[in-house]
Structure formats: C-alpha cells, structure tokens
Amino acid sequence: MNEKINVKPDTIFLEDLLDEIANGGYKIPIFQREFVWKTSQMLELFDSILKGYPIGSLLFWNTKGYKTKDEIGPYTIKKENSNVRYVLDGFQRISTLFGVLTNPKEHKEAVSSTELKNFSIYFDLRENNFSHIRNQRLKNVFSIPLYQIYDNRELFNFLRELDKENISPIDKNEYIDNARNLHNILHKYKLPYVEIKGGDIKSAVEIFSRINSTGTDISEDFMLSALSYNVKTGFLLSDSITEFLNSLNIYNFEDLKRDTILDCIANANGKIHFDVKIEDLVKKLDLESFTNNVYIHVKKAIKFLYKKIFIIDIRLLPYPSQLIFISEYFRLNPEPTCEQCKALENWFWLTTYSNYFTLYSLSQQRSAYEVFCDFAKGKHHDGIYRVNNDIPFNTIKYPNKLNFTGVRPKALQLFYLKSIIQSNEIPDREGIKEIFISTSSQKDRTPANIILRLSSEFEEDKNKKQVNNFIETSPHEVLEKHFITQEMVSLYKEGKIDDFILQREDYLKSKESEFVKKIGVKYIE
Image (tube, rainbow, N blue to C red; front, side, top):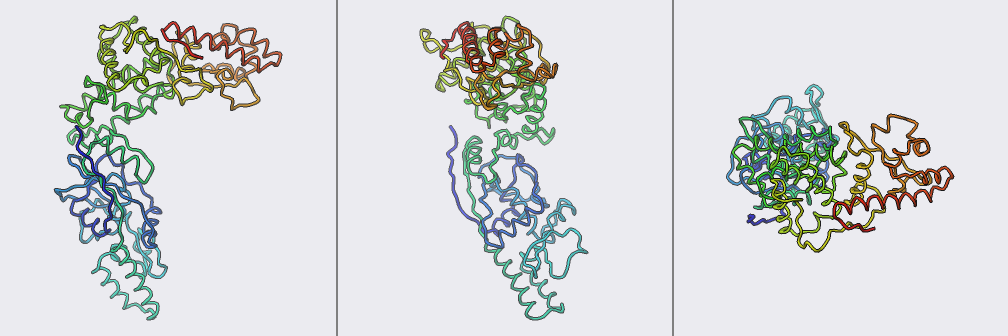
C-alpha cells in the first residue's frame, strides 16, 4: 500500500531558503537537468524581485532515499540535514538565487572560478538595474555585486567606501537609498512553494506534471534514477533509457515514450507492469544488468512490429500495451518458431481491431496478461483472454479520417501497409508518404482520398509523385495493392474524381472486412 501523501502550499522568506540550502536542507536530486539558464534569464529574475513581481512557485518533495547533486549554482554543498526536501521544480531559479546572493568569502567551496564568474550579477546604484560583469576592469564604483547588497556587513563596507567618492550629497543619498531598498526587498521577499510529503514516485510525478511552472513533464525513470544511481559504475537509468531510445531510430521508434520503456522493465519482473511499484525495481541486485537484458527483449519486439506488422513509424502503434506484452513474449520465448511468430501476428491484429486493451477492467487485464504469458510458453493457442466465448469481438466503426490519433485509423493504415509491403523485406528507416487523389482539398483526410506510399518507393520514380502519373501509369498489380481497380482508373481518366473516391471507399471496406473476418472479429462499418 502506498504511503499517505500530503500536499501543502506555503511561503518561505528568501533569506530562510538560502540559509536552509547552505545547511543541506534542500537538495537537488540527480534526475534534475543541469543548470541551463542564460544570463538574460538571471537578470530578469532579479528585475522581477526588485519590482515585486512573482517569480513562480517552487515544488519540494519531503521524502527519503534519493541520491543528490552536491552543486547548487557555482557552489558545493557538503552539509547533511536530517530533514531533507528535494527540489522537483524551481532548480534553475534556486541555483540563480543561491549562486548570485551567496558571499564567496563565506562559502569558499566553489566549483570553479569560471562558474563563480557566471553568477557575477551586479546592481548599478545610479541606474537602479542589473548587469552581468565577468571582467572586473569593466566594473565602475557604482556597480556592486548582488551578494554585497544582500550581506549586511558587505553592504555597510561598500557604502562606507562610497563616502570617499566625490559625489554630491543628493546623488549619494539616492544611491544609498537604492542599495538599501534592494537589500530590504531581498530580505523581505517571500517565495510561494508547494511541499509534497510522503507518497510514491507515481504520485510525485503526477503532481509535478500538474503544477510545475515550466509546463514540461518529467518521466518516472528520472526519479527512479536518483534512487538507483550506482556511484561505482556511474549507471544512471535515465541516461540508459535515452541511449536505448536513440538506438531505435533505425525502426523510427526513437520517440517511444520513456514510461513505456519503464513499463517494459517493470513487466519483466513477471507481473503486469501496473502491479509493480517502480521503487521496488531498485531492490534488484544488478539493475544495470537487468535493464540491459530487458532492452534486448524490447528491441526484438520492436523489430517484430517493424518487420512483420509494418509499424514503420512509432505513431502507428495502436496500443503501448501491445509493445509491453510482445516484449514479454520475447523474454519468455526468445527464439520463437515461424509458426509461433505467425500466431503472434494474429494476436496483434485481433487485439488491434477488437479494441482489446480498452475493453477490460484492471483485474481482467491481469487475466489477459496471464493468458498471454501462457501463450508465450506454448500453453495457450492464441493468447486471447475471453470473458465470454459466446460473445464475438467487434471492430469500432470505419474511420472518417486517416490520422495518428486513434486506434481505428491506425489499424486501417497498418492494413494498407500490409497490402503494399506484403512479405517483402523493408529497409531500415522506411517512411510513409501521402498523396491525395482529390486536388480540390488537400486537407480531405478521408481514407479513400489518400494513397499511402513508402518513402523508398516514392523516390524510385519521381514522376510517380504526381497522383495522375501514379494512377494512370502504374501496373495493375501495383494499383490493386493500393485498392485501386481498373474501373476506378477509368473514372479518374474521365475526371469523375468523386465517383472514384466513393468506389475506392467501398472497395477498401470490403477488403478490410475480408481480412478482419479471417482473424475472428465482426466487422462494423
């Protein structure tokens, strides 16, 4: 059972936050990206504080067990604290505030002099604005480092030195007022924050995705990385997944969702992925070795989907669960026979056309997973879980548009690709091109108005890029694979484009219906 979660909004004085950071009370988990803010963003942050503008809410997680970075801004924080809060959102802002306002004379553990210079933000007493000065020779007597404005003693010493300058009393008073005003603003400035207490990775990820300030989601694997980081080997799960995804570009699967990979890793524990608490994965004696083995099964599954089902674009995958299940198939049966692969193909088509993964409750999905595992072990004939053998599976209705946003349009596109590729070997990085039959509206995505072409085939004969050349000059057997009959060709040549599209739609439906009935699914138009 998950630990009870508590979410509490609150505010904290900037000076209290900086003190707590210096004492190790706030830590940066290693799943956080590096500091990437530009100087302009740092200057804008302090300009907002000076003007009293809000700079966004911070997000902290009060939990235990995460590996953290020692660096915040240009400084190393080595102090430990019994009550640590991890920074989920606000790392760039916190790094800027701590890096710029911390007195380097007090906190001498700087990462490098170069890093210190990157955080050298100055306040101009005359102009009442901020600038970044790396070269001290460009500094004038009216520019003061922000850490000196913030530090009481440093500010006092600076103002005392200012007295020695030949400045009119009126101007001097104005400059002193500007410095003291900013000093007071910094010490009285409050930052809103939300603190998550307790809970697990999934709940923290969900909260982060809902209320983080940047609008960017974070994947669970980044947070799991902080728990599983291996200091000796340097293994970081998030980097490992990134590297693996990059290797999938030959199958056009590099944009596969990271959480799907994580579900495959969880699934390899012998339970359906949603029953595996991802924190438990770190209990593996060798997560690195375990994960690398999972990648082997996942890659086999993706190669199967690409070569046998012709999913030549990740956007064509109907359900992530199909990849997760097929990955498990290759874990349990690493070298299936041709006959077993054919049965796995049938399983894929049936689960796609029947809306299989949206029909069942969680408990039924567990049963479906158990049946599928028996199928992989050769103990079940087709791997399909049926609640009632007397009730047939049905398709949902024929799609109005061909796109990548629904299972049914994807199913039709895959059926189309199956027709034009058939049993031919397809090259790596194959792509899909579209040509529209009706030139009156290029946005008409009616299935019968679109001819799907493979990028390799598309480039063979540049003249065939034109729809009229393709329809009027392609051999009969090629057109048949694209669901275009000779009668349709005649209609096209006569300029009866609407009749052509209507006939092609009927023909496409009839061919798809034949295929769907063969796999045991009732066809619904």
